[in-house]
Length: 397
Image (cartoon, rainbow, N blue to C red; front, side, top):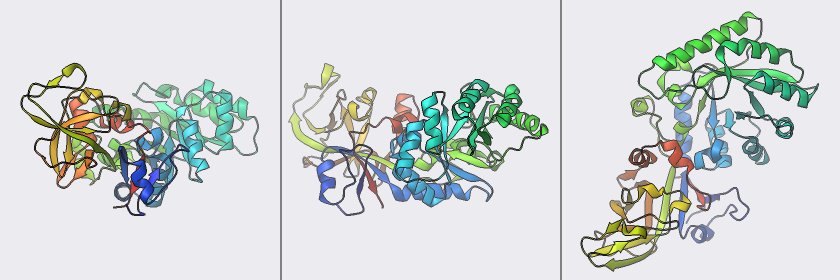
């Protein structure tokens, strides 16, 4: 391995490493993060924006399983100017890594200790209700420097945020509370990935009405943002002062009809090694419950990755992987640490060879979208499911 490879790790037992130790840590299975693809994705999305529109890279959930600190550093170099996280500890992790850009905590915080941490680490919170605003003001008191806060309105998501007809009351309250300063107002689309734009248009109209009512009171709003990945790709009319992009920077499309907007490359690949190869006779049951029984003499490869690593057990007997640029089928129930493959078409396969579960090998590619389609879920869930006993390995291709 070359010195272009390094381990991305949050845990002390997985330090940044180079050279031969990469092989030692990745003997079983690992996740590769293509920083070149990430850089290209961010730059492509940034080109869609006007000079007045900033790009927030959403790096919550450990950057959708990609490694928050390294993803944040790469995205900021490529044109992002804000970062979005879900929790206070996620924001602190970025600060401890030396990242100084604005960090918006997208989740609701009500705990006084976490509020103090927000101020200490110079994070910027989301305010969703008058009650939350009052708690923040009480905890922070009359600070010399006001804490920038972001007001969230519920325009149709029915999740976090004050209901949009009550938006003006929240804005007026925060505007007069000591210790707080409105940094932005935002909302979140529920159906931006739907080709039918009617619900999205209704939410946008509600957002406009709320903003107009607030501006009529004389309150100045420094920044507006409404667009997630799908809305960012859908129309520049949805960009406002900033866009919040998660899935798209990781190289996946929120919906197939948005593929023409920009060319993205998946950033994450999942790989593992063959740990044993053997031949079984016809009529042999494979794995727990014998959900698969061989209909012929079969070459089996056992691979060192399983559902404890994030490969969904419900993919059993439904997934394929790539070996030497060709697809092979997984057979039997996926177990906690291992899965089995029918490699009869590769008679000279050896232990130690690399299996690509997600990613590209030669001209063949399997993506998180493929797994999601099989399971009836979404690619976001697939990406976030890979556990941290799989080392994250950064590659610059």
